[in-house]
Amino acid sequence: MDMEIDEPTNGTSSSRLAPIEEVKPTPKQIKRIAAHSHVKGLGIDTETNEALPEGAGFVGQIAARTAASIIVDMIRMKSMAGRAVLLAGPPATGKTAIALAMSHELGDGVPFVPLVASEVFSSEVKKTEVLMRSFRRAIGLRVKETKDVYEGEVTELTPVETSESSGLGKTISHLLIGLKTAKGSKQLKLDPSIYDSILKQRVEVGDVIYIEANSGIVKRVGRCDVYASEFDLEADEFVPMPKGDVRKSKDIVQNVSLHDLDLANSRPQGRQGDVTNIVSQLMAPKKTEVTDRLRSEINKVVNEYIESGVAELMPGVLFIDEVHMLDVECFTYLYRALESPMAPVVVFATNRGTTTVRGLDDKAPHGIPPEMLDRLMIIPTMKYNEEDVRKILAHRTEAENVQFDEKAFDLLSRVGSEKSLRYALQLIAPARLCAQTCGREIIDLGDVERCTKLFMDRSESLLKAEEAQKRLAEKNSK
Ligand SMILES: Nc1ncnc2c1ncn2[C@@H]1O[C@H](COP(=O)(O)OP(=O)(O)OP(=O)(O)O)[C@@H](O)[C@H]1O
Image (cartoon, rainbow, N blue to C red; front, top):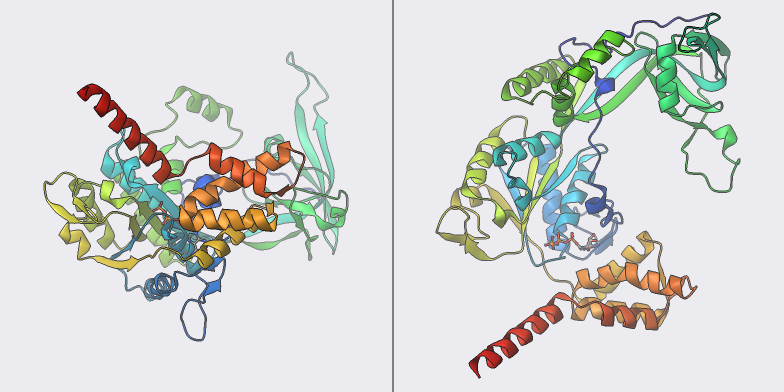
């Protein structure tokens, strides 16, 4: 049986929003999150509801993790409205890691948006706009749709050229594609515009794909697991050959954030393969601004989706580090934003005690105005003992796939507890490089010693700067 797919139609249930398939999720801030790849959750004992001494990659910090898990329960019971969390404690005591673990506990696909308060101050964008964008990035939407699709392992991929050639050379008249499932196979004849998206996704014979019947949108699911032993090492994801018929109804779930929807709808929209539209998009400015009107329009449509059961709201975690850097204007904006029915969970963090509130002359605990402090559930984090530092370093070296010999690891742990955990964590990568340049995979004592001499920790660097200043003052006084 042949299938011709010519004009893609909008896949979503509302024509007022850009099709969800065209909404590209914003890439995660990989660097900031990679440092916590060993943390998989809060590590709570399900019987006692207390944090385990060691669990889900977390070590110690039991009271803070238990408190964070109570907050997660409050979020699930929807009793956090108008409130936020503050993690207060010395540097490298796991504040970011706890906030990230909270988003893991809230479920798969729940957004985690880290923001350093100083990022709010930009000469180009208003501070409240930066905050608003981050808020909307942290609100996820899980869109579930049942779609008519053709799905199977690709057995044939033949672009057929037109018989007569134009001045510009031959063009493709259609694409022949063979799809196979465990139950049967089908050959489809596809519109050439679909070939572009097949090329972009580098679909090859042996891949599992699906094509939406009413829009022609193609999605590569992965490589069929029949080919799993082709190479010793593979970067690809293997998926089983689909069961059932090639043409079927499939539940498709996509996670996007409100910010992704804002962006997708701020672009002039056109239909795939429509030349006049592509040209007009080139001429037009790339993006129109995301205005408050556009946002409230999107909120309205999203609410319709939620009411009709097509979508589910997933409030994520917005983590604002160094909260003492925010000023009064930002806090005033935040009071209002926290009360909105579509608010993520806001987790602030700071390592400051009492300090001046920016924009006011008054001092306040953590540099936060009292009106905001009243709305906060404050969780303190404590410094680690030597044993905990050793265990955290062991988790990190395992996550980074680095091997130390016993004496080298003893020294690294001592450095971590005597100087700082962050300093010891930062020595792992250069120590590995030192070993590799000597042709070794296992880091030895000499590598760690060398790195501690080459790189200073914060207190040593501060001492050196103070000494230099003292010498200069003595010289000037002579
Ligand atoms: N209790 C812990 N268990 C496991 N890993 C931890 C723990 N605490 C901290 N870490 C790890 O140590 C590193 C530093 O922690 P993190 O960045 O969360 O500290 P922080 O309190 O946010 O620091 P800062 O105040 O400097 O922003 C990270 O790699 C983190 O995953």
